[in-house]
Length: 560
Image (cartoon, rainbow, N blue to C red; front, side, top):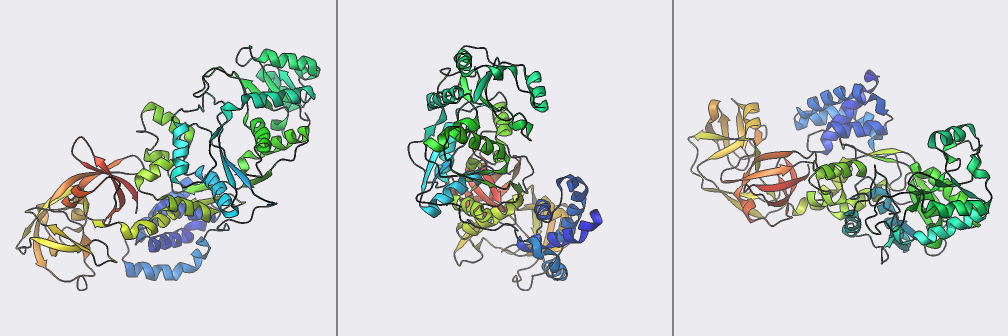
């Protein structure tokens, strides 16, 4: 199996390096392999080969890289996304379309579930329709609880993403009486029943296709039992819909419509104890609110089938139900999950809902992403029908394109060591370009000391190197270095170029994995205002966040 992928892995590593300034990334290569059909079960076996190829490719000079890639380019012609990019037409569009945003308020919206919500918004813009914002806060569970903070986090995210929705925001928790009214209609029609069976027996009956004894009571008795539900103990009974007990999918047989919960609700407290499940509340609201199209993932197929079943009972024609394929955002090492993020925020392991490990919209904003980048990223994915993997590098590339021209360049030295340069020229200041494609320049005042990273020093000891925008020197032992020349970069094109800092301020950079990278940057950062986006040369783009209590200038890493 490994040999089958070997050449392709090497080709993709070369291609990735060509696209990203000579540096390939293992996760990006893996994402392309998913598009070529790699099974998730093969990841552990294939990763060592990916890492080996990336290491080899990243050691190459530009000329060697170009030569190697030219030899294997034929293997990566399939690297482009196989899904159709952009917004394909919606079916059965007649008049003004009405779509909905329906987030469950268990936390901040992350990049994964933003995909479906933004697609709804983009289609409304495309067809000049209406977009309703309905917070799906019927009730949570012990594992997935409603978070009070989410009532602000969700509209905050949509507003930042420039989503135009109708006001006011609607809340499911305000619509319980509507759901009760329609539940009673179904009971009176003999299509639902109150079940008090123990879970184990009920599960066994459903698997065998045996009707529950509770199912046999007439509608009048079922209505009585329904009324009793409102004072019954939590877990004592549920309201179930009558489907065929011979349905080929056991999970569709007599599904739960309402259950009892004593959890306190963030908005309505303990006013209600009997709560509808997702498919019932949406079966009612999708019709009453005039929704014309519902865009959702294929993982909600059974909920869609249940909605249709309920519409048939009422004789309603519901909206068009459209199911998109599942989209995996490849290249993100941690699992993206609101439930997991909720646990980590509650425990204090994450600093808050904008912690970069949540991958929330708030965290992307704080890292320096632009809303236009997220919107373009989602629009390019489109409403794909197949399950696909999209590399996070695609989002990085879009954002890089948008912020590059306005992000000035500055020097950052990680794990700095001081070097002593013998016979160095008396240079008090140097002028450097703020951007390689612009003529604007800034001055760097040199102090008595020079610092480079310990990594650069150790990798090039005994060699002649170029201090970027300054001069050439030979790195000696114990930080002792010798000035060699002030040659122009045309003559020095084969020399390793190294970042340096003289007069400095202490810096910390928060990475996407939640770890901090420490170092120093040139003193110009003292003039920065909060939110400024820059590029630390040879490190990556970063957004200035604040000065911490230790006097360190804190940045949030955006991407390379």
